Image 1: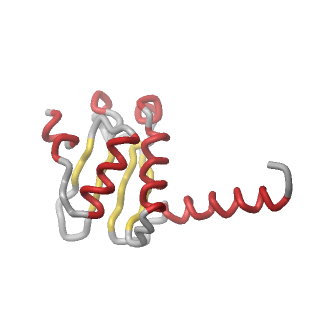
Image 2: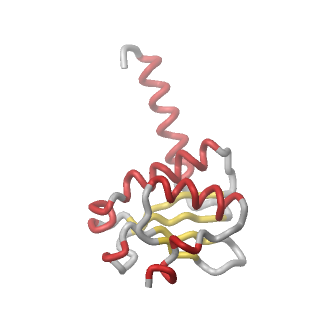
Length: 121
């Protein structure tokens, strides 16, 4: 950052990301951000979701965070809630898996079953 204009650009990018986290859209992606989730890599996973949704200009999707989802041994955990459908819980998430979930589940409507809690159990 070398100028006030650079600082303003950083502020705009940060504001856009925070706007994506608001709970005002149809589909919700809930990222577990308790201590166990953060230790397992929650921040890069959440960042991957926010970036991929922004890159695809998906307006009816929000990315929000929550505390402990309750199954620490399967961290990192993400829940996807699409109106009219059952909640899907993804486990052992990575940024790469997050991008695939956006492409397959959020965009195309196909649950990535190999990443779900049912498959892990």
